[in-house]
Length: 374
Image (cartoon, rainbow, N blue to C red; front, top):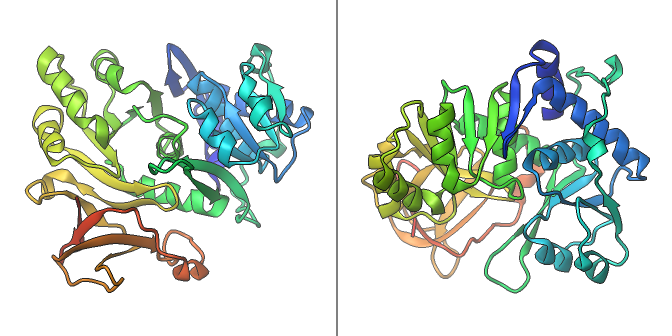
């Protein structure tokens, strides 16, 4: 079953359990299921149809998340453009823009896209989902449809556009479920929903029947202290600042059982300070929007290896090559490249010959498949 089916399943067995918390608002699994169906009906009535691509510019994280789920269920590709409107509108052609405000850029840069304004009444509908709309654990017969579009800022004037299919999204979700630490009930994510990583961690929590709290990085620590969250997900780029904040203000986080730092840029000094100050029970993940998790592992196992970001995931082929593109022996530094293996977590075999992805980083691969990035 896909992740929407899982949400509906949780809504039937535990409708009052908290699913999503953000900015002072809470949503139970039952209300989340109702919200998805309500939004789906509103979007259908607005004229949106399967196969279209829609920009989502909705400020509140919970409303935004509900729309992403509803669009997925309608087989409409979503792009979370909040905070990055201009980058997306310059590089992606949209059929419609779903927004809670009017922005002059909408008509100026996407004159052919239809603006659909979200009204508060959309989330006050008391709708129930019928038996026909409930989970039946049936796999999508056509999982290759386009479901998510992400613009990856790579330093160039035009960001790289990553288009994710439903099949790839489900495979990435499976890999995220494998990578998270066990024994937690409430996750707090400091990753924005407009990133594929933030979206996937949110889905992961719901897939596992847990509670996900969406918060800004700098208030996540205080929220954990006040509401006893067990698991923190944050960008590796924020590790140093969060560790410094924790050390300076001495707010205890006794409920925290573990953490997960993700990204493509890791500071060994910041990670070391994090492990000493916040949690030694921390997983590192090197991620890429087109593949998901490339390498991951418990940081305490390799904290003494400079630049180590985790062990290569079994669903990814990783190489370190020289200037001529020849693979280097283990423990030799070179240019990093990777691609989907195509034989894990349900990915199609024909992806094995997919082109290599070059993130533009120097790296080293040890004999036991530990990836170090510089």
